[in-house]
Image 1 (cartoon, rainbow, N blue to C red):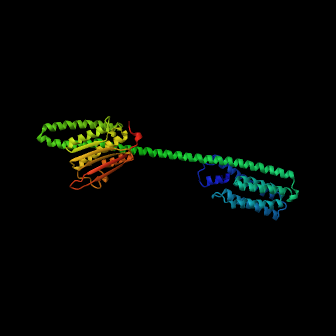
Image 2 (cartoon, rainbow, N blue to C red):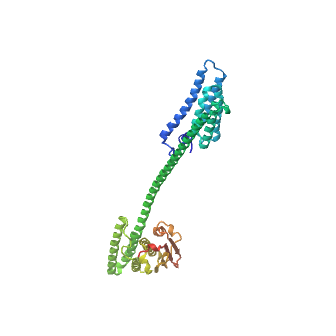
Length: 425
């Protein structure tokens, strides 16, 4: 702990945070400046008093002690009032107290009334110095007072004077140590409070960042869900409209049936869109098991496109956690949509395997594959959405694809970790 003066200068002059002062700054500052003023007045009183007492016989002694007093006052002002570089080095403390006590020994020899000036140094040592230096200094001052009272002769020291001075020393040092540790405890408590307040402010900032991040993630989630639901529906409608346009010329009845199917698809996706607008809180699988949903979707795609779509799903898939099941469902949907839109494939295969520690979804096709930069293209938002969904659950999404005219096909593989404790019974 620093002394009162040192702490005040460090906190108030240097501009440091004053939250760890032993008392509030509005009380602390006047307290310290009060003692500055008292010290200056004491020096001024001795200067004026010495000149006043010796006004009829002003000689070199008066000038000498006045110069010493002015020098002591100047050192005090420089080190403890105007100094902004803290803490003060120990050698500068030694300069002020050592020089001041030596000057006092000379002053008291010339004018006995200077004997009381030593008690100012006694109090300053307890206020300005750290514990060990303060105890050494007040011990030296007490010894000098005893010697001065015995006219600087050891053999003339009286026992009563020694006991009295020792009692004063013991009381002063004891009181100083108690005050020191109380103030140190208060300062440490202040620093702890400041740290807690800083941590609270950081938590508030972190909470605000989390809120902003949650909003961004929610926007991404809504964008993915709109793409996975409405986007898929529009792709399917586009394919069916093209087929219906061709059918009207050769088979109006089949074209009418196709129109009814498209109307049903529109109604279904209008309901999905309402759920999206409401926050997409409803599970995308509805009440269907994952195996059933995948088989039905593969059959629907096969019927709509004429492509052969096979589906193999482990029975354990129906016991996966809901979040994991919905992610697998969304990835399978998107992968098949990409096959339908881009692959020009004749066959596709959906395979879902559930192992002890992971779930693996593979969607293969025999189409022309994807270009190398497919994931970077802005129109391929679905690939980015698949990756975000999978990686959001700690999984890995990989693409193995060819892109030649012979058609080497594409494999989309999503591997997600499975914690058995989370598997639904």
